[in-house]
Image (tube, rainbow, N blue to C red):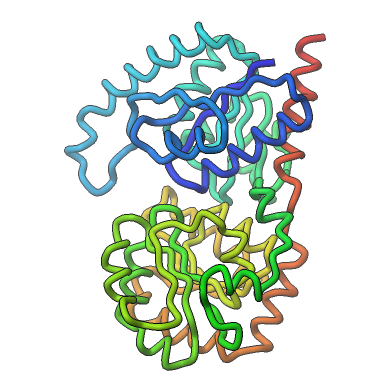
Length: 365
């Protein structure tokens, strides 16, 4: 069988896609997989590193901050459909899987027009407009949370959770070894600061401004800045002990194992990973995500007392005081860990892959 997996743009779409691909191959070694992404985006680098082929489309998403930049969007969308047509003609897929990101739309739309089975994985608690539109004709829609029948036909929904990288789901790294990996002190509490694969300006600026206060509170940091803030982060940390800083963490299993507390955006995959590794977390949701879905994601944990949340607009004033208070609140941290325990799903990739293969085998019969 030949399967196209389409989507990307951020690690929150790319890493689940790779997890699903790996699960498909594990269940059926004969499956041939091709990824389709957007040229210039991080999937063009991360997918080949994972051992898969990828084709790039000349497509861009809607720019909310500069409307003038959207003038060329219709032309790019039309061009992407021609590119998709060419990819399908050459690869001849038996099915397509969309994991989110604007490159998934033309691929699934074309597949549905051709009667090719299409599968959607919606990672967020609030579905994106493209997925809602595509879900009407999808073979199956995999979701991470309950209550998604307000977005998709109920009979097409399968609750699977979000695919978490197996290296994280099955990690057996001790905290001592993880701290040694980052060159940090075993006697201090460790805060993991991660704004997603591309970084988070507000979180970075709040941490930067208050680094000395955090260190004086006997905390140490693992700080993933993202590329845009990497140089400023390195300069801020220069000469200070107890700070590991880089634009990207390639071995997140070590970062989670080392952490006592996490400060993070609330992308769907970050939320899924945190429920699996069960780490106390302070969310600062990205407010400009479509339909403000990161806030919805975070609130799923906040209402279960499994996380706390600070609004992005208040982060410069409230993030550090909230973080210092959480660091001192041992009963609060333990309560978060206990409440997360029932939420983590470690086999979502297998659930998705098994269902896809079951459907396709029925089609072939």
